[in-house]
Length: 330
Image (cartoon, rainbow, N blue to C red; front, top):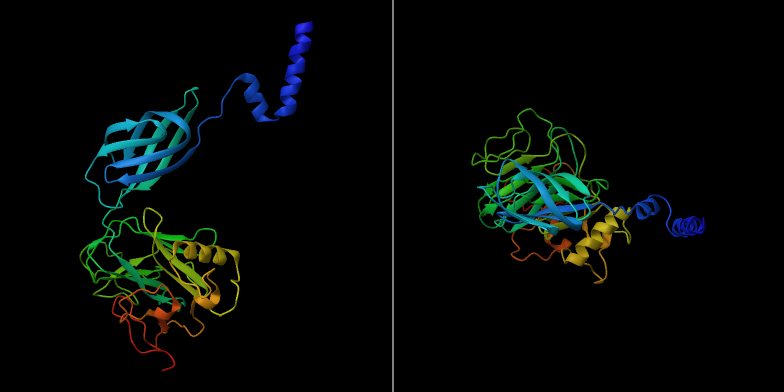
């Protein structure tokens, strides 16, 4: 009886220290199961899967199918495979992992193959207004041959989901313009993923520039916004801050957060050297459907500031072509 009382007392102390599922797990000797954290391609033939604790992979397959050469278990599982993949090709891993206590976790996760051939890029023109069928767009220019696979486009005004596009594998040539149209509103809109740059029809498609289209008709870009491109290592490739007014503070916290991110990354300049404010952004009040926001392409250096940009003259939009040098108000 004395031992039973002692046991009950110990249990009471245990439950007072830990409550809920944690107390039950502790009493039963059950450990926390592993938690999956991320998947990341680290080379053209290697991918890492991160877990909260060391695990052993007990089953693994890829779609499209890949031949697995080696698996290094641990908190970070490194898988080496053989396969002729395109840069930034979309893959899915289906795996089962087990920790030392026998807890298992099943993971089904998409990721993209490694792309080490991303060319230097600059954002060169944006349209922030919409008049059907002329959609908002973000135009970029490649400054070398390469592949855009895995490049990601973020637009801060979409607070719940700022990632608006991830490029599939697509080869580009140095000097080529790539226009990402942010709505797909015409039947003849086509993604130009190959060598035919005249494949797409529709308003503002270019027979000499590459046209790609975001499916759907939801507005994704606004006059006050922050746009940035990230590579597969989360480095900022290029960015632009936009504001309809030159006020001292951003109207929403997600704009302020994105501006702070660009400042820390050195991707956009601020006047005071402390943080990016709307007064540091490209002012867009005079932009319209035909008066787009243009980079001054005569400048060789990228100052990462509003001084590189201007609003073009009425009817001056040139998606997929060199920018119109006529400026609004001149």
